[in-house]
Length: 254
Image 1: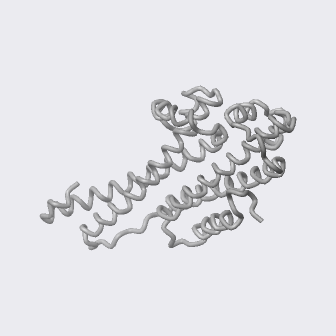
Image 2: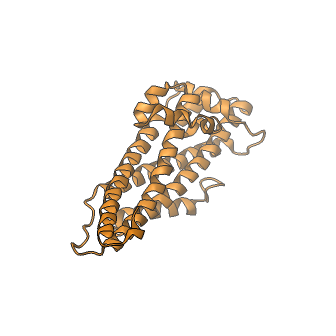
């Protein structure tokens, strides 16, 4: 039986299996497979949060649940009503939602499972990026090294840009929905204030559920690792391009 109607158990199991495969396979392409898994898990996580929030809003609007009741499920403490109130104010409650209480608890369990997978996958990617890179043979063809660096850079840039965009939206959501100060959020995110403020428009259309300081720190650290990898590949590319130029291959210059 599916934990959520919109997220079948088979899908959740596949996401977990792919993540564990990446952890156990040293030859797996962490940039390609890690990026794909990250996108898929985050999308499923947002679906779970949406289902959870709709159930919570319905229970408050139609079944006399209190903010404390909802906060207990969402945060583990009845007195954390401020965050629950922000989420409920943003969420349109369905008029009819059979089994709303069961849906709420199932969705919360699913969201926690997916959040755990995001944390696990982030750690795997960071660990792989921190490993010493394989060294090219001293007489390796500079054209091949240039080509390889270009291919790797494309993957790193895609992963980094997506991660930074996610970081900025999470930060902007904390400001626009949860009342955090911009400079405080930018410091946690290791980002410029302009990066965060540029995401305000998107954040205002985004659920306040998908934002907390733990997630922001996690994504910002991943962005830092990906940025360092991009810098490393840029240096390799420039060195290979210089060798190509010295060998009379100007068409391969950056």
